[in-house]
Image (tube, rainbow, N blue to C red):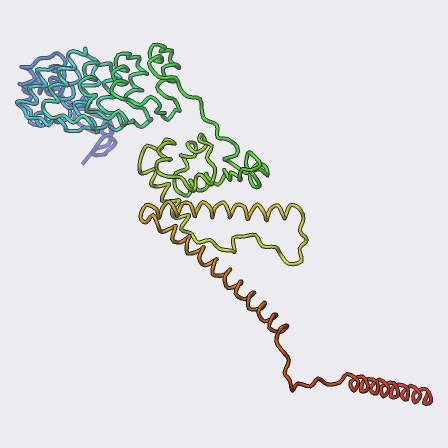
Length: 460
């Protein structure tokens, strides 16, 4: 039972919490820390190992690794990297060798898509120390062709850091065409960081100089933009952009329909080349045909040797074009393709010219198909096309022979009618009797007509 304030006989406190069990005011606790035993602080292995690697203390590193199984298995330090990465970045060769030889750490183990070789190539230490570490990692089977989360390879990182000896070591087994997420190759990294000797090595190794990154620049343009003129002089001068002639883009005048550049030349039909190449998935090759000033007829009869002369180096590109031409010539020609005139339509000069142009284009295509077929059949049977031509000529000769026979038969019949003798007993009817009968018929018809006229007149 709690008494009201002022009625408590205890001397502890005059405040009784207004009769409640607990008070909202904190009570002071007794300091009993001196009564407890003081424990020694635990060792921070992460920090100790981190500084041991930075200082190159091999013995201290061994001691810590042996005491912590997590770190010994390649675990991450609190600072963000595993111990192997810090040793490679600081180019501590004895410590890296200890990790690989004694602790059997995986040289290709990835952390955030990074490997020990990438960390070593991006080190800021001297190139001599970095080269020794890289050489050790390669001896233990480090893979050169791996990429990090930004698409960077060990070669790109070495070019960025300027490690000349490392670049010489790994450039032979690295891809010079590999690009990062921004479209930059190893040559871009060497140029942007002004490493002249590394640029020379990459160019000797065959690095492409016309590659364009996402910003739209080539390595030479990057060097010029940053005023690295000595590097810019190493690159060949860039060609002027090719301007496609207008005649390959659209039909501009009547010469494209009626005649060529000269009066006797057939039309070129140049815009059709771009459409056909687009259907063959080879629209990028239009420049080669435009430079050679090739028209539609030459394109429809082009050969593999001619395509090679134009600049198509790869057989797959040439086969794609030749297969497209084969499918085009395989398509049957139809009379419905010709222009037909609507009924009750008055033709003007433009309509007539359009009809003639349409027919001329069909004749050009058919002539090209015949030459293409002849060249195609000669490879298997040299006499096949000539036999077909002979058969066609023979058929025409037979038609002409039939016409000659008919004319000769009609001529014989005419001569027979003229020279044939008349029969002896044949009596021709006299002409006087026929004249008399004709006069009687005329008189009768006149009497009938006159009688009808008199009858009608009397009746009215």
